[in-house]
Amino acid sequence: MKRKGLSWVGLILFLVLAAQAYAQLLPDEIAQFPKWEEFLKTAEIVGQRQMSGEEAVTSPWVLTLKLGDFTHRGLWKNARGRLHGYLEGWQYEIAAYRLDQLLGLNMVPPTVERRFQGDLGSCQYWIDDTISLRDKVDKKIKTPSYKVFNWNRATYLQRFFDNLICNEDRSEGNILITKDWRMILIDHSRTFRTWKKLLFTDKSQGGPKLMSELPRAIIDKAKALTFDSIKAAVGDYLTNEEINTMLFRRDLILKEIDRLIKMNGEANTLYEK
Image (cartoon, rainbow, N blue to C red; front, side):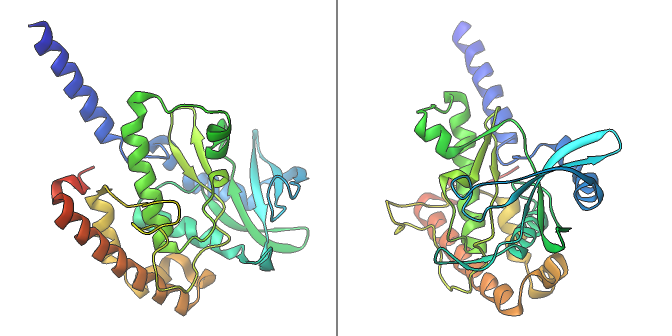
């Protein structure tokens, strides 16, 4: 009887973990997104600090914002043109957030357009109480065993998203980890390249980086993407060419998913929410 009881506990824990598998920003946080967007656009700037090149190569500004009794930080960036060999675009920060919302990933913090010191740029809601993946690696912090399942699935989602937006600069420094081991994705000014290839595949540098397991709902939403639906979401933050090459990569992703299904089986590749 004791063994049977433990098996039920294990089953319940598994179901709880599975149900939370791709909820990175929590439901109560997501419900606040419209308010956070408005806050980022309209709050008074009561403090400012420019990050050094060692902290962030694009030298963004950390703004302290206040609206009524609420004070919070936002990250403002207006990187554009070629910098350190990369093509930068602050508008891609906003496009990445809007596409994240269109797909229902909820891995990118709210990001809006805001003017600062006379210049237009992106302003992203600062997520407190996080460490970067680089911190985790450098400090040799182990993922708790009961969080490994969800963390792996979040990693597959990150690869899916970065393949779609052609993120050539996903580093350990721009993957954030919350205290409860959720993954938050930031820094998307080097994305939406017009490349007709996937960056995370079985031939990735340093070894295979597959999208081994993905939510069926996300794949269904990816299948439903059209030029018009993307354009309606991102507006003028992306060019027609950037949208069309993203749709080309979407088709490559779907082919890769079909390959993984043939290799591992559909039940082991696509999961329900």
